[in-house]
Amino acid sequence: MRTSAATSVGPYTWSSQQIPDLAGRTAVVTGASSSLGLQVTQTLAEHGATVVMAVRNTDKGEAARQRLTGLGIGPNQLQVLRLDLMDLSSVRLLAQQLSDQLPALDLLIANGGISSQPHQLSAQGLESQVATNHVGHFALTGLLLGLLEAGHDPRVVTVASALYRRARLDGWCLSPRGAASAS
Ligand SMILES: NC(=O)c1ccc[n+]([C@@H]2O[C@H](COP(=O)([O-])OP(=O)(O)OC[C@H]3O[C@@H](n4cnc5c(N)ncnc54)[C@H](OP(=O)(O)O)[C@@H]3O)[C@@H](O)[C@H]2O)c1
Image 1 (cartoon, rainbow, N blue to C red):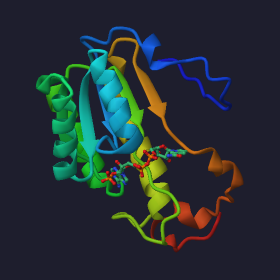
Image 2 (image 1 turned 30 degrees about the horizontal axis):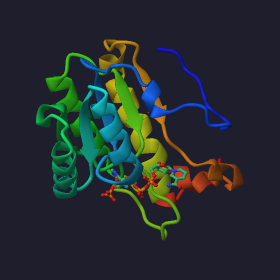
Image 3 (image 1 turned 180 degrees about the vertical axis):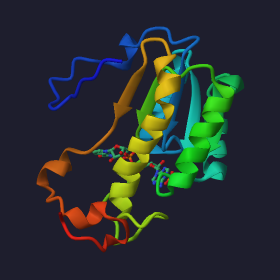
């Protein structure tokens, strides 16, 4: 798997019309029940991919899936599975479900995320934004590496905000329950 990072954008010369035929490819999109994740799911499916919609609220995910099938996307192209990025046991369960049912994975879109939240801790005691936007996806990616390595030209796309440039990383937010020092 190649790695690359897009650190700047524009001028915007790319459009989704340049996406090749994705028939036979399988993608996982986190946070697929709304906004950007839903749009990405729709676009990938319209190009032929099968998409696992990894969502924290499966009712909302199912409603989103039905909206997409109403637009003409094949019902067999979309599957809704639960993922709560704020709980590593949910991350592990999703990875296990995917490993049990898929021979390979071609695309992981790590899209789900939160920002500007009141202070809250994840199931494992990490600050919620660190847990959701970073640790959850880091763990999911690691657990899916075997499937990705079996994929066709596999890619992991991490969606993030450039606002990280304005952040100051305090070690406490990487320590469970915020108890440890910044070392
Ligand atoms: N929109 C922007 O201007 C912008 C700018 C820079 C970066 N981004 C990044 O783009 C990505 C998508 O942004 P967006 O604007 O589409 O955000 P959004 O409308 O808030 O949607 C975020 C998605 O993440 C899901 N999510 C939140 N917490 C989760 C958890 N614990 N486990 C699983 N899924 C969870 C949400 O699920 P629910 O549907 O259940 O709420 C929702 O589907 C994010 O990573 C964000 O940081 C967005």
